Length: 179
Ligand SMILES: [Zn+2]
Image 1 (cartoon, helix red, strand yellow):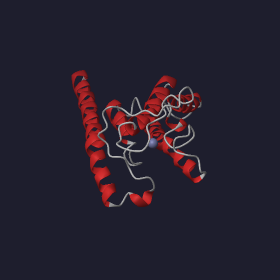
Image 2 (cartoon, rainbow, N blue to C red):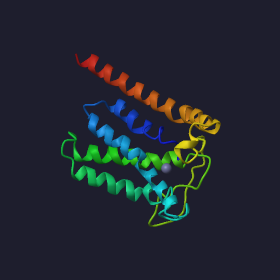
Image 3 (tube, rainbow, N blue to C red):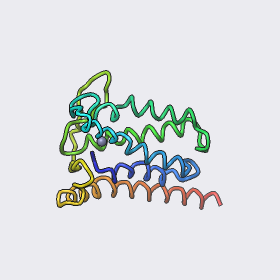
Image 4 (cartoon, helix red, strand yellow):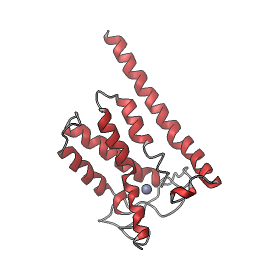
């Protein structure tokens, strides 16, 4: 994984890009949760399920099917989220699948099982600038943790902040021309 701290950068930047009228705060919170949800699969290690299994780390919970399914479920019960079915579905799907996308851009571990259950292939992208994160919270606060943090800052947070700023500026401009 990229670290659990950096996956939320994607839903957070989308929230700032589109604004809270389109993406209400509660929906954004769900998006943040969805962006880290796939990594709950690390419990697989505790149960002795091997990394390369479809049920192992970066397996099914990182797949397109999982992201689609979970987003559909929440969109179906959309009470209190104050957004349309389509908005909820799209936002949550992008939040969840962005997790696998970031993982596929990391330098280590196994690739991401995007197409499980149809294919067990583990996929990495050609472009992999993000240093792989050590697994387990105890390892975050080490020297290697710092190296990982720096690469995530550069390749995840800086683009996320830029996207947010562009969105905020566009919305300000629109408001100005409207008034
Ligand atoms: Zn992951």
